[in-house]
Length: 243
Image (tube, rainbow, N blue to C red; front, side):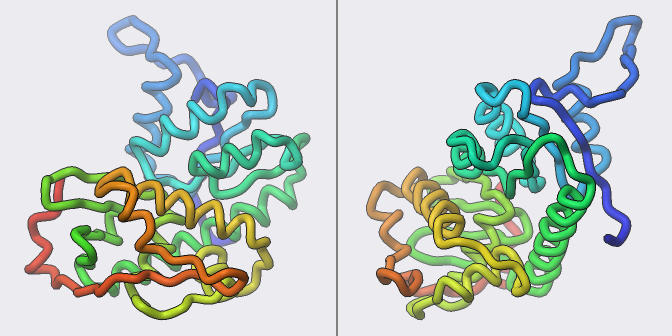
């Protein structure tokens, strides 16, 4: 794997092995330290160990997701029902404990490969896409509506939406979507794709009502289609990106 920056953290966002930090003779709490490090280091991924306290996992993942779109690799029992909930909350993948270095390396390689590819694709894409009352900013993983309301997307949700707005009114087969989300050389189950599609639908609905979630149409056993006309906005058109 090429040089990459990865942050390892526990369910309380403390960092294993980190020395206690002092500011004005007062200790900095673990959560503040984590988010400061996340902001300053701009990592390629976060490895979050939830093996000891899985009950707190969803809260921790959502806390990260609300402030940063960094991919999250969770350490837990992949067969546990909680693993699916972690993916719903925004985790990119799960690996078992005890950690196998080779498994960890492969998972990080895949996550970083797909994420970097998405960033390159977004960098060469239009400044933004407008569809059905939404404006989508792929470089910021951000959805906005005319009222000024905005909602952040995870990197996988943003990759999926970028694929849909690139091919509106066209059936996108599951294999094609899997390639856009995970890379062409990785085999994934239908359930993994369904989870991300449903997360994206919920976010569309959260901004513009239940009907907006139906903009992504299911073609049973075949794939999905964005049933909306899409227009692209240039850099100049999209200068007013919400802060």
